[in-house]
Length: 301
Length: 312
Image (cartoon, rainbow over all chains, first blue to last red; front, side, top):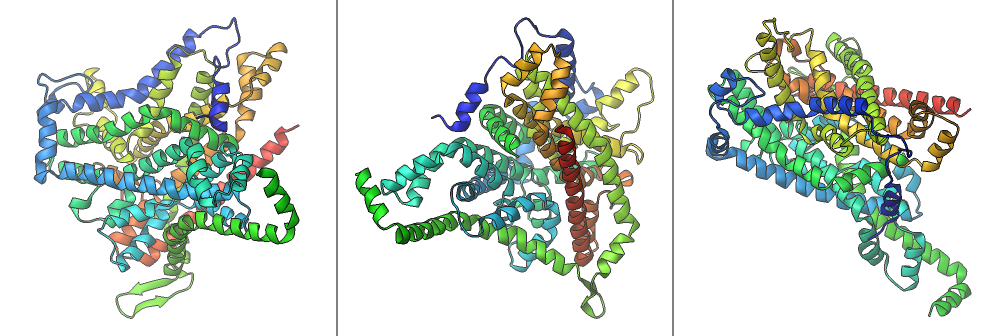
């Protein structure tokens, strides 16, 4: 499937900005890889630290392994403590982020398509409102949202996390730009002349052409919910509903307060590692999508 | 078939067209409405509700009374709020230029194609963005810490006194480092994607004129991706003022250095959930949103002016 955006991306795939005769630069290579070490070393530390027990953490150098390899023991301890709370937090996180991500992507796709491909009264007004909303600090909305949800009896439910996460003004903006580029008007007109309903045109033609953009919005909405800490922190008090972020923070607080006695540092560290791995894998696996999506958003803004 | 449709359309143009337009309006709104419902319910309503709440004050005796703009007057004279805003402004002025400058440097270096293994370096720089902010902060908290932090271990191995990175004087810098580590890659990818979209012909003309790599970067590449750079600046401004997770989590390991009003968001959170003063918290949140709007507007305005001045 070749979209306009996809085609452009293909045309861009050149030998990066390098004229013939100019080679690679050793100085630049060394410099950049030294900087990359700054980004990778903390994660390497996390990986190594999760193979140590509490004593090992205190008695060995941070960037090398301790005498005993305890990764498996740490994982067992992590998943079995408090009747398997950690596993439940992981499942909660997956539930919240998949439902919110998919919901946000569907809403943003339909809205972005309407903004890109239709003329209708109120279009300029609503688009200006949506664009303005990108500027609103989401955390400033969290407290009034909490009070409204408390009034409606929705705190301490999954809806308290999912409903606010369905709104992605930036996703709508991105989908509008994407739809303008990827869907030729002539194709829509041809489908209309053939008698296809507007909904069928959207579901069978537009969605297919928009799929790279949809994946981008889905991925970013998913990550935003996966990483969200403020909203679940204020909305949830029931530990069985916690996502990983709030659960980990609580574990850390317990381990700091007890000096590692009530909850082990090694458990917190191993939990951190476990909650990082799925997203890194997803990003590496889907990099084609988010890169093209970011390109669309940044070039057109 | 097609000609038939066309000729029939032409015969009944005026009525057809208005019916057709109405049909399209209905279609457009049916695509838009699901989003708008959630948007209004989850964004517009809470925003107005915060505005409404901020005009009241709850008292132990006498209940909730309307106080007009009193909460705002109180906030504008509240040293804890003002210090928080000042701290975030300092954060903005120091951290954002460092982060975006480095992101731009990495993007230009990778786009120049002169780095061996550039594709992998790009991923290495981006990876921290995929790490949840909570984990990032926990991890750096351990790295900074004296218990088993490798930074302290390194200094001790050299027989030196390890600096306290979680002290009142150093904590802001330590948080700047955490945020920079997390977001350089994201900003770099935005800039890099924009660089890749510059048409090749622009470089070729410059090369024929004998322009070197630095000259091309300065005179062609950076001006061409101005809108992408602007986007990263606006997002960084919004992000900086909203700082919450990092101070909230570091509070556990450095309560004295952070306090309860380190950032305006942390202050609003503590007001609402520790002091139970939601009205004042709403005013603080509203005021913070206002500050963010003004600063982003000023940034955009100065960016536009520069663009006009630059297009000589």
